[in-house]
Image (cartoon, rainbow, N blue to C red; front, side, top):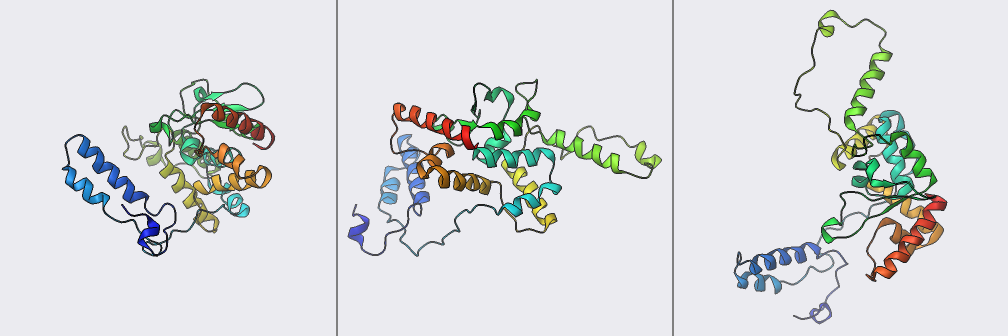
Length: 269
């Protein structure tokens, strides 16, 4: 196949053709299992990649303004606010903040290690380690549980806390018909044991609306942390702590990366 230079025209930015490549890989997988004719896959290989201007550019993900983060605190539960701060101090992904359990945290030494039991790169057999410095440790200490496999941040517990707060603020007696009302045995929208990235994002969105600030997403908090780390220690340090893949895949260099990440998060995490 001709190179992008041979074709002429502007080169597409990195990432424009990722979906095209994924589709080719899917059909290649089907050919290997005799589910798709080989001619179909070869025809897809002949399809040229998209050039600059042929796709709609998406806005890059940007950090959240600090005042917009602080504005949502009165409108979220304690669990959600702890997750927000956990992300700010660790640069972890929203999904990693959602599924943290006590069993997943190695609480030894000055810097703790959190190894999510499920994460973005697990299907590539990658090891994900989130380093917890003193600030991140203070965030999760009140949430550590005797049940090692229980999720630290539980929507069910958040609902119970909210109902208790509402009952404490009530200034009038509960009407007799409400006192006799029994809770549903199997409600259709019962809160779960852990947040999902969708429910986490939805909680932040509602809080932004109530606070009167522009809507922001939990994934942007990772960029807040990355910006802070990059400013203090450089882009390579940010790559290591955020868990981005390196061009060097040797386990020797991976060990060096972990030591560097541990040292940095011990100072600022």
